Image 1 (cartoon, one colour):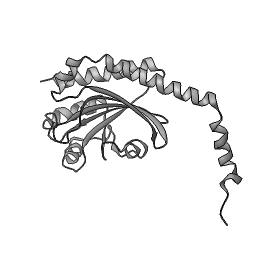
Image 2 (cartoon, helix red, strand yellow; image 1 turned 120 degrees about the vertical axis):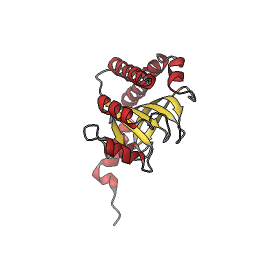
Image 3 (cartoon, helix red, strand yellow; image 1 turned 30 degrees about the vertical axis):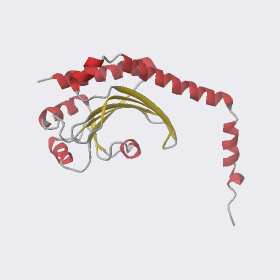
Image 4 (cartoon, rainbow, N blue to C red; image 1 turned 180 degrees about the horizontal axis):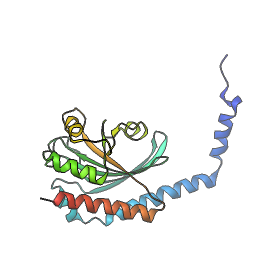
Length: 200
């Protein structure tokens, strides 16, 4: 016998949700507020600051979607060079139901990768976790915790990862109580990131 899912009330409940106009208006407003917050962060990053850390940059871009593991997301990309050899990208991800994250991708032969001691010290100091899967596998990185936590990261583990088939990507959760706090923290992260890249 085929089970009638509507008998459990689940479909009826979902149908009722679709009738809640105010709920969807609030969801739409929340998306716009987060896009606006990320726009403000992006607008406060001078073009020359991006150029100073990566010549082959493609600027800043904001994007969004609704179906990342069934949840909306908003993204701010800074630099936007995804070349697996020499690329660099900073991605700020706000994923509903999870939170906000600051991610950095380095190509396998990026100048900082060839200075592993310096990079390792910075990762530990800034409490970045090392992703152990693909660049955009957020279900695995965030939901399944396929990372090496900063607290457990060693230089040996980092060097082993550099020899692996996976791209070099780090991630840091950004806690916030309101959008003003989120903007301030994200801007501070970029300032620290920029300063680190200018160190000789």
